[in-house]
Each structure stands twice: as structure tokens, then as C-alpha cells.
Image (tube, rainbow, N blue to C red):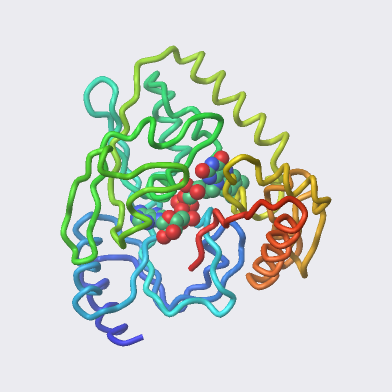
Length: 301
Ligand SMILES: Cc1cc2nc3c(=O)[nH]c(=O)nc-3n(C[C@H](O)[C@H](O)[C@H](O)COP(=O)(O)OP(=O)(O)OC[C@H]3O[C@@H](n4cnc5c(N)ncnc54)[C@H](O)[C@@H]3O)c2cc1C
């Protein structure tokens, strides 16, 4: 990658944590993926902005990630500089009576716990989704009838040239597993959630219920990226895969979970290629047997 040393020098000058040749298997919940030449963990909005502007000026390919819980990285890695917004950039504070302003690296679990502590309701659905705020906004993550769209008020992002912008909810183009951030290369930096005052015991009971359902139904004991496929119009990916008799189907170390057919799991030292070959087999058999086309929900790097 051109200008790599200059980018490292910039990171060092502005105090941004950075690692060379970092294996992505250590940063994805699938636990697969080769190395990226530079992995940066900024801790301030200014660092994100300066790194982004530098990469834009020198045409260095740059991508922002969160907890890697919806990410599949090629075994060969990727010739790209990565901004990882995680625990270094994870502040949460209450704004007024009912709003929370969260840095993109805050985990959803910490935001949900904060909301519970302050008796704020609306985010219970997100309890147990293992992503960070930025990834959740990007994906419009959702579960149990709720989604980010229901609770987001506005987002502050760093655009490709390093400029800092704010988008109100209506400009975010939020729909099923979609946001405007899938259409541009901005880095989501902060999100404001608009919640409502609630009863702490009721909030806790809902969160407990959701986590119990996850533990009962999902193969949480294996590495995965959650639901591998999007819900097709008129059907459910897991039901279709199950109906085709594909539970337990394996390619190398990748397997269609026997517990939840919608999850492809890293059963035993899977490679990215194993997972993608299994994805292709599932897609083709479901298409042939049911006519439904399954689209990947998991993002690729
Ligand atoms: C066991 C398990 C259960 C899951 N359950 C659910 C569920 O119920 N509902 C659901 O919706 N998802 C679920 N997921 C998937 C995943 O947790 C969500 O999609 C989550 O929102 C991804 O967040 P992340 O921080 O891990 O993003 P990553 O995986 O790091 O990134 C996902 C995408 O977002 C982009 N991105 C991340 N952060 C930023 C940022 N700051 N700025 C710009 N782009 C960014 C990345 O480039 C990538 O394209 C599950 C995953 C697992 C492993």
C-alpha cells in the first residue's frame, strides 16, 4: 500500500493507536480472515477526521469497522487501512431527560445497560446483539420487532474528505438492514438515541426475556456472524434452509448450525473460503427447492 509509512507517522503524531499487519481473525466474531496492513484504533473525533482526510488526499483505501460481528474477511486479508471504532471511542452520556449520545465504538450491551440504569426504555431489543453503535447504525440492526430506526434521532459522521457532518433520522434512509452509510464511505462517529422514561423492572424483564430467547435458540457457543442471510420477502431464511434439510451441512470447518438454520457457524477452524462455499451451496439449494433467493446479510471485506 502506498503512503503506508506516512499514515503510520500521522497516527503516531496524533496519538492514534495503530498496529501493522493485523490478523482480522482476531477482530471478527467469525474468527476468520487474513491480515490488513494497518489497523487503527482512534480515540477522538479529531483523529478520525484527520486520518480520513489524509487517506482521501492520498487515495489510500480506508474502511471503518466496529466489533466485527457482521463481517467476513478474506483469508488473503485485504489491502486496506482499517479504522476500528471500539473501546477507545466508547463514551455514553445522557442528554436531557430521555436522550443518549453515544460514541460509535460503544458496545450495544453497554448502551443498553446504561439505558437500564437510567430507566430509559426503547433499546431493550438490542440487548444481546454483539455489535457496536456504529455497526448497528450502519446495518440498522434489529431484533424482536425493534430496530435502530425506532430509536435513532441523529448521527454525526466523518465524510470521505474528513469533514464532520450531522444527519437527522429522516436523512439516514433507514430500512431493513439498510442505512445511507451503505451508499457512502463515511465513518459513523456518534449517534443520538431518543428513548422514553420507563419502569426499570419492566425494562430489565424484557432484556432478560430477549437474552434467554437468544441463548435457547442461537448457537452462541460457536463463532458466527449471527444470521447469515437477510430475510427474503415472503419467507424466513432459517425456515427455508431447514425445510431444504440443510441443517448440519458442512464445507470444511463451516457448518449450517443444527440449532438455528439461519446461522452458518465456524464449527472447526473454518476458513473464509469454507464459509463462502457453504453460503453458495445453501443459496443454490434453497433457490432450486423453494424458488427463494437468499441474500447475504453479512458484510464482506
Ligand atoms: C451471535 C450474533 C447474534 C446477532 N444478532 C443480531 C440481531 O439480532 N440483529 C441484528 O441486526 N444483527 C445481529 N447480529 C449481527 C451484528 O451483531 C450486527 O449487524 C451489528 O450491528 C454489527 O455491528 P459491529 O460493530 O460488529 O459491525 P461490524 O461487523 O464491525 O461492521 C459491519 C458493517 O458496518 C460497517 N461499520 C461498522 N462500524 C462503522 C462505523 N463506525 N462507520 C461506518 N461503517 C461502519 C462495517 O464497515 C461493515 O460494513 C448478530 C451477530 C452475532 C455474532
